[in-house]
Length: 121
Image 1: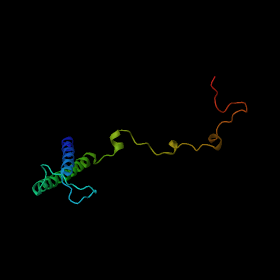
Image 2: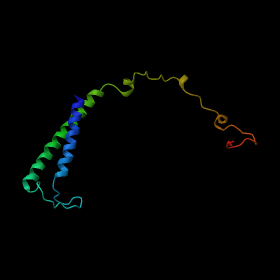
Image 3: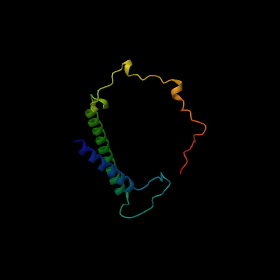
Image 4: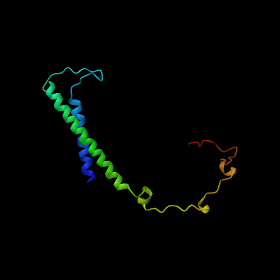
């Protein structure tokens, strides 16, 4: 069910993009005037594309809400850790690592004749 709604949602998104790009620019919103002619001229074509845009947008919103509801139902009542099947670690003092001493944090001392960079033979 979720895959079917997702495919419809993607097709609606592509259709909405195509319909919006086919529409005639009315105000030069991006600074590009639309002066072209062709088959898509006149008020009737703009009205039909406008109505199709509204229909596709409404269907897109409906499928978005449907996908949100399906995802919420699928994930309700369990967390990611519960789905992994790994038991939660017990919080005891025995599991806490010891703090290293200051000597453990320093690099090991090297002799005076040891090269810092290994030499290639």
